[in-house]
Length: 116
Image (tube, rainbow, N blue to C red; front, top):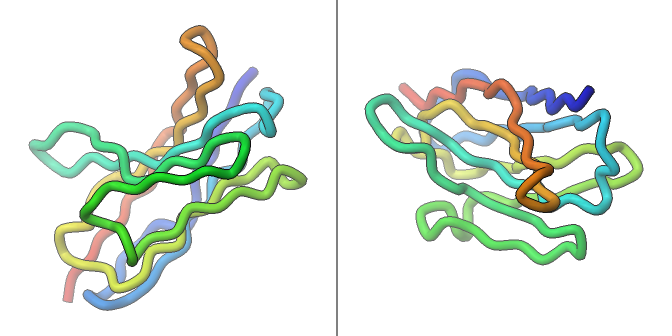
């Protein structure tokens, strides 16, 4: 049974930081591309950041320079360090794991709210 369990969301003031974690089980974590997506109310889900099994990363333009994705294969965990948070970063953040079209999994999401 595959599980992706996110943690680390919460309420933070603009300019603050949060670190999201996603621990995976039931998959060979090291071969998967891992990603973080987000969905704000009334908006479509969008890619925030992604890291391949080789460690290559890419980011949405809106978070470049502020967010950093990383992975620890020994802990089956992917992280998203979010700095200089803005109100517009408010969303539910989802962890995603993909290997091929047949191996594609989502976490349940964690709420991030940026508000003063």
